[in-house]
Image 1 (cartoon, chains in turn cyan, brown):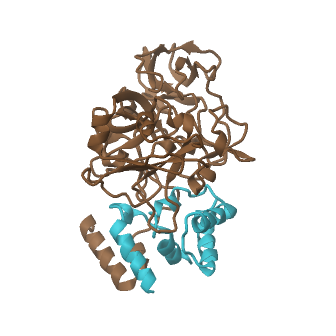
Image 2 (cartoon, chains in turn blue, brown):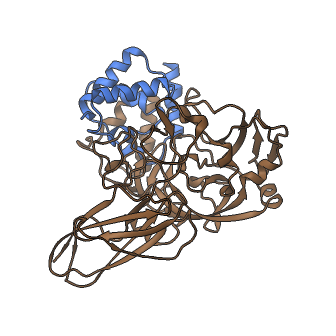
Image 3 (cartoon, chains in turn orange, yellow):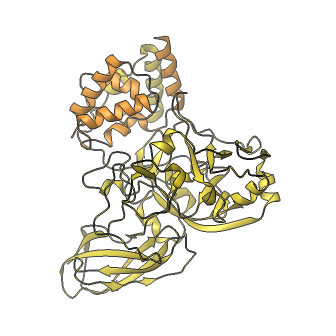
Length: 91
Length: 399
């Protein structure tokens, strides 16, 4: 919790004006996606790839974020995030 | 409707109170499909086409490309990382080091300006993924249109003059470049790119501190950035602070995994020390062109002469010609090439078209370069969606 608080505080300090206008679709996992992904980047990175990736594509992307970009996403959250992205922003 | 400041204030306090994001996300409905283009202005910039807010990725609207040189305040912005500190020139230093030189150096901006010959090159700065959104099937990544590029006069010093002071070892194979921008998390790999030694020592590779006669804008690399004339912009490191001469190939995500092409699909310049079994690093810009004064489905009123205008460019061989077709590729005519600002600059062209009657016309432009290459009709597929240089085809309606 303390870590999350620190990260969120940090996000607030680095957020670019305007990104509060980007919204994700309602659905199971949205909060996790928002908290984990928006740590490092605005959520338009997700919406601009709408309908471009299928579930395998989103899985590859989330794995890249964890393995290459160092995103601290727990395995239990990973599945929720991939399912949310595939069902709401999948091809 | 809440104004922005109020919204941000509310958002921040909600975040702090709840350590969560749900409140932020409840107050509006999400777009159901892909976002339509948003115009947004970064500090010091004109409104540009926003691809992503953070890291900031903004493309230039094509109407700015009528000018020989793209205005600094309309020049595209591309970052991989969200931490982009504003640099104070007084504190800025350029370090030159690495394991393959014997004399590490450090420079202030003033020293760079005063101790080396100042040179200027007109060169196109082009994102490797420009026009990625045109690939079919789609390629993942930022869905750039045609505006992730800009032409500018870059003024600075030659990298080779700076490196000449550092006593390079015979073991040197690559030179790497790092800027001040970084990821939010320490675990995110820093954006460091390297060049083969020969390219680093090329007379057209510069450390630039001016763009179109003015200091570099913050969003384009203030106070100094690398210019690798003819090569795609991934190598043009912004806010440059560290140059390292290396005896072994750079080994990081941005060199070994990102910005790569399948082997044997493009005939671009070699980068031998970074070739893997299956892929090569992207290097120079491929021949390409863009119609800048007409858009697809544009309606033209009146059967009368119509000027078709655009730009053409390549990786430094120089443009030999641009052919225009107004009948979907059945016949081609030469466009007139306008002023030549050097082989790394884009080149404007014009063609006067006189439609014979009302109706639809399929307009195409195809550039050729001194290398003998010309644009393909279909873009060469590659997983990351780089080098989209297919002949553009737009339909205009004369009514």
